[in-house]
Length: 95
Image 1 (cartoon, rainbow, N blue to C red):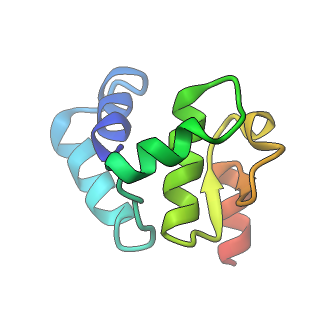
Image 2 (cartoon, one colour; image 1 turned 90 degrees about the vertical axis):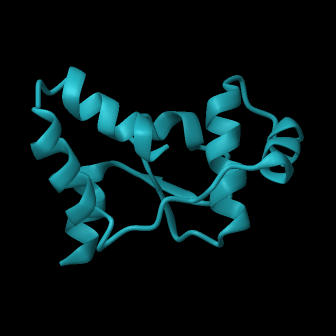
């Protein structure tokens, strides 16, 4: 998932690779990226949601006992046992 974030920084936000890498490195001082492995994929199949990628993120968040799922698609996580917040909401929670 770190790769996805890095890719988005470079493509969607037109960042150069050095800036994107530095931003991600700085961000990782404050957040933990939950891993996805075989067990989490199996759990994701048991989560009833339309989007399998969302289910993968929920299963990873559940497995690592995350406090939040940070996403721009909060509405996709209405039934998630882990509260979903936007990046902006998360930054407000840090203060």
